[in-house]
Length: 288
Image (cartoon, rainbow, N blue to C red; front, top):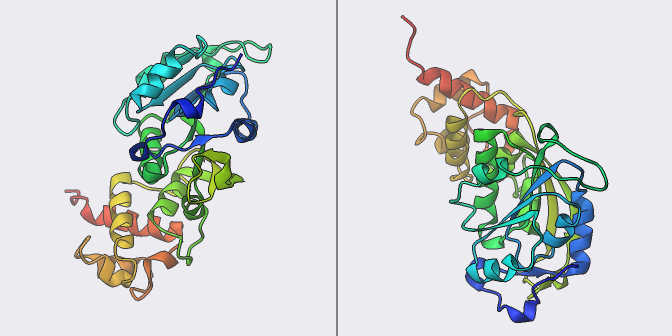
């Protein structure tokens, strides 16, 4: 039996960006997640357990990390044995060691083994730190190659940035980084009334499918640094925006056949990857 923490018994904390999902909408989100036998879930911010309990009912092992210690204490006595509640900050906690120790359980009447495990991320992300959280997931995936996908709730404005196209105002660092390492699909839009207390913005559920990088990137750290440098001065032309990043920028832009008068948001991801590859090659020591 689901034993959710009643929202009225916990005062939402603004500093944690807490907005608790109504169960009717949680059921729609779980359907969009589409849990399968062999799934192992990392849940970010379980809150009152609106997603935790329906997912746990499938038999899937769940590592639910929650920063609010009061919510951790309230959930600890309610969750079934296939749920592990971890008190901590997802931005700082090493969750990989905990996750890889979880074994898949029988789900929907089917058995699963360690070889069948699919590590998946779910969560109602706090809107005040959703962008750093997305970068954190990408970082974890780049380091460990562990996750199959992430199905998360975000402010709709952030979701718009994830699916933005080159040339639009929403196109930026987040768009570029996620499009390189994931394939993003918008699944649901949620009104403010889907949460308690209602946020002042509308929300969306998106799925990030992880896979091999969409473009060749010899130096991922340099690619990220260059992309952030470009878009930190997006009103400037590329020639000016990249000068502070690398003094060879004019020559690199010429080699890439990219007009230095273009703006950063006009570049396709393939063009950005080409620039990063040329910068990386220019910084390599000569072979004697």
